[in-house]
Amino acid sequence: MDVNVWTHTLVLLLWISSSSPVPGGRARRRDTNRKAERDAGGPPEPWQINQGLCPASLCGSKGAAETIAMDSGKPWIEENKQDEKPSPFYQGDIVVPQSALQELRHRRAAVKDRLLLWPEGVIPYQLNKTTLDRKTRKVVRAAMRHWMRKTCVKFRKKKRGDVNFLHFIGDAGCWSYVGMQGGEQKLSLGSGCELFGTVVHEIGHAVGFWHEQARYDRNKYIRILRGNILPGAEENFDKMTFKTINTLGVAYDFNSIMHYGPNYFSVNGKPTIKVKRIGWRAKPKIGQRKVLSELDVAQTRHMYQCNRRDMQRRRKDVCFFSKYGDGRDYRGNVDYTLEGVTCQKWTSQWPQAHCVMSRYWLGDKMDGLGNHNHCRNPGGRRSRPWCFTTLEGTEWQYCDVRICNPLPRRNENESTSLPTRNNLDKR
Image (spheres, rainbow, N blue to C red):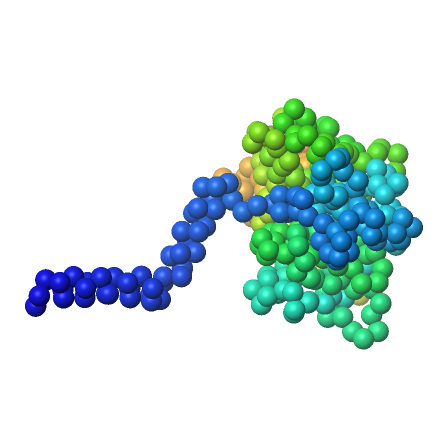
């Protein structure tokens, strides 16, 4: 065959192979894109996506501050400096109603006013099929399932008679209001916002959470490096005031899905947030956008009284017959205390530091301990099942486990200190 014919044939084959789909081709391209994304520092965060945006559904068709009535419940539009676009966002991705602006600095990590909680923890929702593509709708459903598996918050499709509901839309940017605002409440997942962790985060705002680092007590746990913050973005690091704040008693959560990342609003790529030494044992991953943390779950369950409601439901349950009378042989799944507080995982060292797990790691699993937060009474060192709490300043509490044949109550003052290797070995 002529050399030119061979050359043209080879070129044609190469063109076909490059333009035709082959098994695994899309996957390889996705992997290449993800690698490029990682090399570039990962996908953009909501605060980056939202910079310079004034979505039509918030700002009106003109996208200007003057389109918002001063006494309306519509979002506050920040009057920025010259030549800068007005911003409807607080702390990067939160929309604040005009009426709530003056009270903003009296807010808390979880909503202060119980009227802003969704009744019974049930959130009617609607997915906008016009502005959200199928992939994004699938991610939203997965994120809602994640919240429902971990907490008692429930999502259900909006019914005809529902006045208050969450409307997922695909407007520009990633943003949400905090708590239930009343009426149609929009939550936007625009281009770049369709990541699972981002959706879980935005839903967290709608459930009732502000950003974790906005807590009034944050200075005990993190340091804000103001020299690295973008000029004009300083207010995004405001903390709520001490007088009216209520963190529900739950300890500071470095690993919260609602926490800023270490480089948020950085002007030079250097950290804007640094974890103090007290938080090192929590193995902090500030800014993680993967799943709800243990303390995210604990605070949600406390805020919506999930444990209290479960406690009422379980009142009819039969008691537990303990071979030893102290519940050391209890292997049930109750994971909250008599006070309705969610338990800390036995494998965790935050917020309560302890060495109860030392025998477990040595192969002694007779106590039923493990990588869970179910109530136990290792070695029968107390009179009934107990657990370490997720509260700040409260080390442990007894659990809501009724024993049929309880032992006489002991003097509990003798065993309120943190367990040590010595007293565990002498049990």
